[in-house]
Structures are given as structure tokens and as C-alpha cells.
Image (cartoon, rainbow, N blue to C red; front, side, top):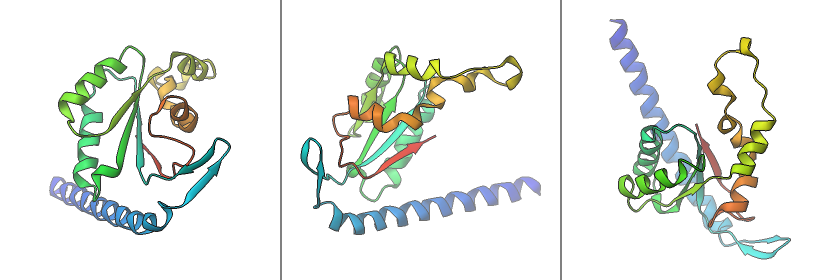
Length: 171
């Protein structure tokens, strides 16, 4: 009885999240029809807003399956998947592997793979870990990278710029 109740609740949550995601993307599309043509002035000159939705995932896990499933699910449920640009931020060692794997597993999906040893080291130097505080895996620089996404992406992305209005972090 308890298992059936749990399955019913999970299905209800999944259905509600799908409805809300579709509704939010439709609202974004309606509002973007007006704002996507606006010009944004920045220090580097005038930049046109491109209407893209940037989605970021930060991970140093060598198992890419959760990231691939998340990306595939997002693309499948998006009203306008062509507006999505995924940014996968990882270690320099894993970046080429994810790049190759994403081309095979996610053809046609816009994915930018980012890694920056200096930036990763700078974040890691600010993290302290006490042996009594729990799991050491939580002290990874990639758990703190979301706080630095605009800096990280502005220095290495082909699509992220000063006019970017939508940046979503997937955890």
C-alpha cells in the first residue's frame, strides 16, 4: 500500500513539474518576443539579445549518464529546444571525454564544454574541510562553481555574453 502511494506521489510531482516547465517556457517565449529584439548597451558596445536559454551543469564525476539524461529530458520537454544551449563545466581531464561522448549521445544538441584549471584551483583554495564535517566529496570546487557561473562562462563561452538574460543551473 505504501509503495503504491509513493509511486502515485512521484507521478503527480513529475506531471506537475512537466506542466510548470512547459508553462514557464511558453511564458518566456511570449515575453521574449518583445525583449529579444531589444538592444543591450554594454561597455564593449551594443549587443543584441539572442533569446537563448543557457543551462549549466557543473560536475567532476566521471559518470556522465546523469548529465546526459538531464540534457536529453530537457530537450525532449522543451517547447523550443533550439533555444537551449547547455554548458557542461568539468575538470580539464574530463572535458575532452564529455565533448566526444556528448556528440555521440546527444546529436544536434548545442553543448559547450568548459574547463579552467586556474579558476578551479582558485575556488578550491577557498574551501576548507574539517574531518568531522561529513562527506569530503561535498568539498569539491564543482559544488561551489554555480556561484561563479557568469565569470566562468564569459571567459570561455561562444554564446554567453553581456546580453544573456536567461541562465539556469541544473543540479
